[in-house]
Image 1: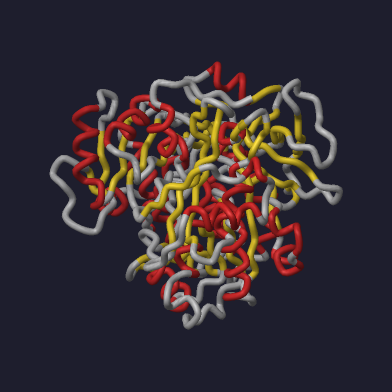
Image 2: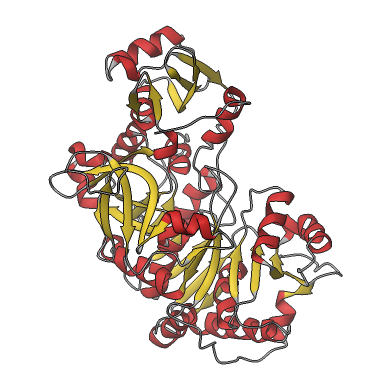
Length: 517
């Protein structure tokens, strides 16, 4: 059966001298990476841990983070990637919830790692993977690698749990999604035809490695024995430069990152001739941003992935050919991958007709084991093998899936259902609007009123009445915002780049209960 360590061993056999990872001034080929991973796993195996014990990672992107992802299951342990944007109490919750025994950390999180070690009773060991002096209270990654010899990889595989991936918390406190070796492999295999990779491909890790979105491209690179170029964190200027410098052929970016890149002054002058495939996902891409991206980089194959952590993470893909063809399909999420079976169901669980919106439910070998320590949430989300995604969507006559909103973000105003993404697309099509988020706020007459948060392009001004009039030309009157707030600060984002609408709603709904039918 398949396992994450087996994929590394396979790459080392098939392409031993091929470049596996590039980070800072360090380059490892697949043979060297395989050896490093197995040596680190040997060090982990000496920590008196048992099979499936948890090892968390709290770090920015690096080659050592990458090696840790595979070394942990190599030692028969379970990886818990922690959200690098979370505050101490949130990561403390995740460590306690997962009963984590070991924490791997880098320079950016030394202070938080020390606090977690002091505050979390079950946390026994901290391992430093940074670039400077290892703290006295931590074990050193480099020492663990250099002082240990390779060991055989664990026999855990297939349906055995390999990791606990915490959700972004956009609709409540994070849940730990338990995923298997098989699920991560199956999700990647289903998406492979869309990546169009080969052994000479160069994949850029710039999305945070704690998030499963990065696994989509990362797993494909392992399966093709391709090169992984790793950037510590996202910066639009540095990312544009890195693509040129390292001749990156494939990259995954969330839409928020793409918006920052296409709005950067260097976007039109940077040489991106090496870039063949730009995969995006994690949140909807505004239509205006997508059109600008297609105009700015016409030779780059844009590919969209839709899914969620519970699906490891990919359910559907919109191909580069579909993007080039344009038309209405551009606003779709594409078609189910070869491993995904998808239905659209109504409130009673019956299938909706083509063109009718309902909840998107998915099954396949890439579905989660369940939520850690949350049997009730598992039972409501995972029903007879189907994952109820919480997304509202519909299929067209050609089998393309259209995601219209999160079920919990849908606004019910005067008895009418309004999908916030439709309103957001109307607003962001205005030439002066840079970013937007739409929520429902309490309204005595209508139940909920539509409210928009707007960020304008720098040094631009536009009135509320003009934006509302702009919307009236594009969408029905009951969907037009009743009020607008202008912001200069960025919208609150989760680690996956999704707007945290729960945070935007809080001031309006404090002391009230918001329900969505």
